[in-house]
Amino acid sequence: MPKRIVASIQHIGHRVIESIWRLGRATRFFILVLLKSGTSLRRFGLVIRELYFTGVLSLIIIVVSGLFVGMVLGLQGYETLQKYGSESAVGTLVALSLVRELGPVVAALLFASRAGSAITAEIGLMKATEQLAAMGLMAVDPIARVVAPRFWSGVISMPFLAAMFSVMGVFGGYLVTVVFIGVDEGSFWSQMQSAVDFRFDILNGFIKSCFFGLAVTAIAVFEGYDAPPTAEGVSGATTRTVVTSSLVILGLDFILTAFMFRGVS
Image (tube, rainbow, N blue to C red; front, side, top):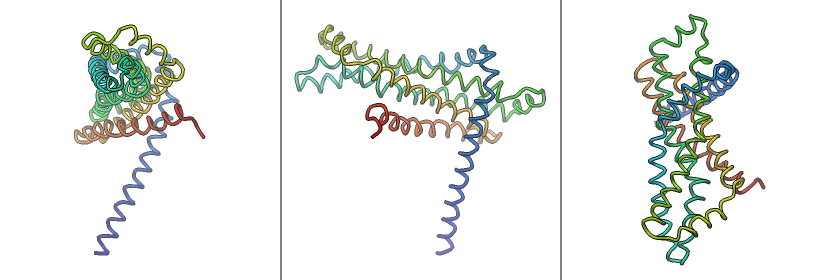
């Protein structure tokens, strides 16, 4: 029995030490990507090409999800607010919920599951098929040529995807509450316009989405580059990307919300 306890403690300690080493490697890799981003920024066509794969191809799931989330928000908000005679404020509820919270968070989760996993799988397969090693033999830096463009494309596209999600969510709420249920259109838009502040709501949501894009793409490119060059290794790296990104998004959301809307005491 004591041997089992000692073995369990050793196993936990080994996992903790390995996690710390892995965090250190990720930090060094992130700094290296930033230092070698000059090639991507000078040859911006590389970034634009990756913007198509990470941003444009993610539009369908973002637009459809935003529309249905907004419709559900509008329906649920109307059913709740009409009990208190405030159904005209449903536009404010939908807009603030999406711009402050649901837009950046849900869009980032969808981005991680669609684009983040694709980035990890692509870089991992390039490593498994020794394409990255071949680039090194040809004096081409794989981090500057492969990793950095994908990193910056994710950082750039995430805020726009979050904004598109929020816009489609507001439109979905408008469809349900104004077109289908019959809430007054003037009060829907006027109360929303008076309640939503550009700096306090829209700008803070934009900042959130920038942080989420930075975190998701940094995790995705590191997991792909650090994946073992086997089919099982690439599969595990893809799974870790989605799981880790989701947890980091939710944790960052709490931290950013505490700083933005509550302030630092």
